[in-house]
Image 1 (cartoon, helix red, strand yellow):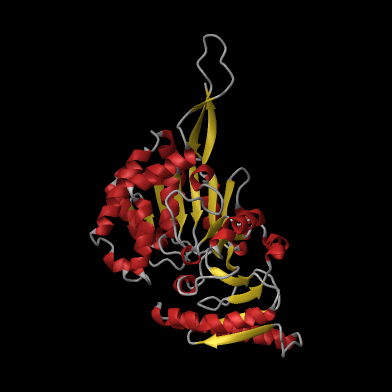
Image 2: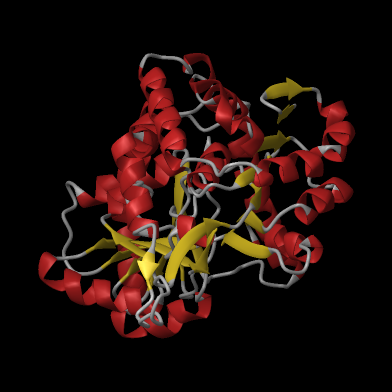
Length: 428
């Protein structure tokens, strides 16, 4: 399915739509700029329709729809969007400090759109493709969106309804369900773009780098790793269940999901003791959380089978470096190494010893990939450990239960998206 000119088209019409896309883009660029007020007003009205159940059939396809709405709804209010623009872009015009010559007006610096953004979206968060387009609209850009295969139609419908709320957005949004294998179509989209926004792992980013034209700004929102760090006494009645719920609810599929639970210790005995004590808490969260899909169970089984085969091939069948504590619909794996890595997902984190004196050297091996740390520690240690984690390269240090929460005005992976989607122009 394709959305262009404010209308839906069959995917088979991709060639004809792409053929006329450059002409339409140039016509839009030659016209008046898109008003951020028009974008904000349309999104705010759409949010109010959301409150009235406008998207109920589509939201019914989403696991934990209520939790999803509680996270996304505060971000699409007028107040949140106005705050986002002010926080990320600041004033519309900033005067240069150099005094102008006599008789000349001051030299000023203004944010301006890049022009055309190509969004290559990931499917690990429902509605993320639509939100990526919203950020492009807030900065006045024309947006070409390549949908992920996992999209269930929610993004297209959100965008279609947004255009109905504000027809002026028609010429600023084009959505294609082009498969990633269609390199020719993606190259044609990229050649029209001033910036390419790519969401995904190393393979996706590498693929985009190969066809990104010279001069196009590559804006990567790549794969990130997150973990929990437990130091000193914790509140087992609140902190442990909160961490367990986060692991189960996020299914460990998000960049902010806990993949490894690190303990501030040198002792593997402490690691095994924690696994025995935390496993019932994780099992309870799994029993109360969303049911594990057949696909998720199958993927986990394949991952574990592949690991066993790899150990057999390398001659390490009796690998004592990892001990699995199996629970019902979840597990914990005690590991003797300290590396930050991806877990088996779907409620199956790794548990490792990492004393605070070793935090920096271990985490710095993943510099550029670090995102969120869920910190569980006594309050008197929190400031020192937070500072250490920030110096190691973490962009978010939060409480265990809020590792994947979204907040109004927050940065993404340590940067403000709207700044990346704009350029600064000097004007006299």
